Length: 249
Image: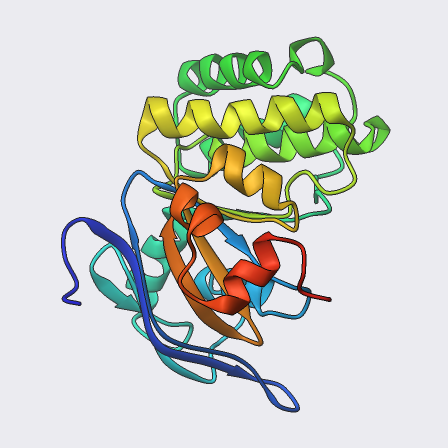
């Protein structure tokens, strides 16, 4: 497939080796404005893929193209920095600064030199969206797990990145927080055309939220496709076994 305008992210022959090769993706292309759910057994390489794309770790080999340009941790510094400003990763365990909720959400906006008025307006809107407006002045260290994850997500999307990467964003959260975060993901995608890639162990969540699903197994992409097709008529028997709950992991 040719790197094209509709493609926001494309990887080719991407690999990662620790003591052994844990990831090898021949080719994967993600289109603008879609929500992707990445599913697969534990150890399939899902989180590793997000870390490589977000330039937190260098790949052992292969190419990553973002917004039509090649990026790498050892490549053109200005291009890599520009890519980092257009994508963000939210971890399963939220990492918040030891300051107030509103200062956490405002951080990326201030770093990108938004005006004081713009920062104040965006923070207020986002805290409203995640149901945390009344917590604006509270210290982030006093929040519950669900509250902290909502703040982390608000902070991540405050500057409207082109690509939002989510690594198990609702793991271990209660149903009300899960519902709120899923609704925010859908709203963000609809309102801003943000491309969202979500790793999840919850296949029901992938079916609810994602427009396309990527199934990974043993470090490789086995199958990709429209969500309903993956769940109702997958082509690969391993995909079928996984979505039917017959794959042991």
